[in-house]
Amino acid sequence: MTGVQTPTRTAEGKPRHLYEVDVLRILTFACVIGVHTTSHTVASDDVGLNALLGLLHFTRLVFFSLTAFVLVYSYTLRPRPMAQFWPKRFLLVGVPYLAWSFVYVASSWLISPTRRGDVPDLVRTYAEGIVTGVSWYHLYFLLVTMQVYLLLPVIAWLVRRTRGHHVAVLVVSLVLQLVVFAGYKYFPASDAWLHGYQKQFFFSYVFFIVSGAVAADHADAFLRFIRVHRRAVLGGFVGVGVLTLGVWALQVGLGQSLYAAGTPLQPIQVVWSTAVFVGFLAIGARWADRRRPGSPLARVVDYGSDRSFGIFLSHPFMIWILLYGDSWLERFVPKPWLTLVTYLLVLVLSVAVTELFRWTPLSVPLTGRPSLASRGQREARARKRGAAGGGAAADADVALAGAGAGVASSADTAVVSAVSPEPVEPDDALVGETDDVGRRAPR
Image: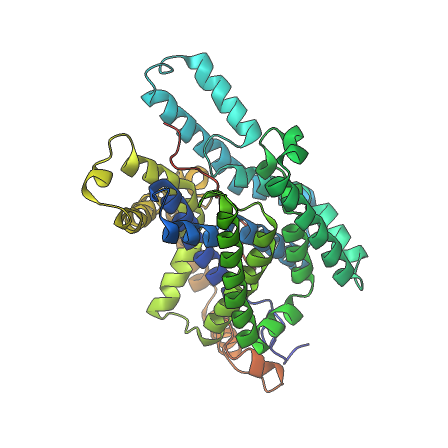
């Protein structure tokens, strides 16, 4: 109600930007780079890094929960026909999918002495990559994301029709997810009909899609629970992490390789990824409650959240460049330091490339975001219109910002101690990742 501040609403009743989601996205994105750099640089007998890799394999599952959460949350705030929703979503995700698929396929084609110049081979490989999501090892995530976009009407209908029975829905989807992952991990013959494309289909992530959607339907209560029980949530996060490492060690003891024991599509990852999702949100909620708009750290977080999708798209290319062939990096940096050095270099290069792309007309296909140059032009025009409108509009904006930064006197205020001054719908063009990239990308 108006005058009562909640985790998702200002005291004026307007939706606020979910800064806790920004933090979750950034933390998970940082782990995405960690997964890929470690997968490419870890020694097969390095126990510590392989154990770490097993822990980092939560990323794809967390992002599917987050994708479903922001989709349903945004759709609840602003319902709109799919004829409007789908074109926007497929522009900002589908176009980068097509563009980067071509970049990766064409790059492999150009450096191959046996394929270079064979244009029919390039066309065939590109078409196969588009259909199957295998143009490069991380792009399948966008293929699954677009499946979730197509299924949004069904997801929203399911959430709406099962209100009052969401616990049962979660239990059923959880059991189904555990059965599916158990089949993938321990009974490989059970998924032979998928011909190795398990990760390319939405049904491989049913619990994470459903749980994210259900959480969005209870967003206020969900985020309030995380704030009130932050210590318990973070304690559970640590405890499940220890359990995950224990399962990894047990599977190694039973004869699995250090890498295979930590693969992502297995039952323990269902529990661990769920703990990471709520744990990262708890960290994000702490940040959101203490965030000072305009502070250096706030600007860094805002920047990281905005650039994360472009960095996701380009960072495997940076890994490829750094480690291609007889890599100078591998000659001069010994293992295990190679993993850390590669991580830092990939991060710096990906940020730089993404920043460059953001200021060009290629921003949408290469970063999934509108060009900053065009945005600047729009903002300049808006400022001119605002100046022409006189001081009354400016006074109203100041009053709104001041009210938005105030603190309500209800019990909810104790839970949410800071308010976003601007009511902003969360971005639903999220980024995910792939985990099982093997030791080195194809060359």
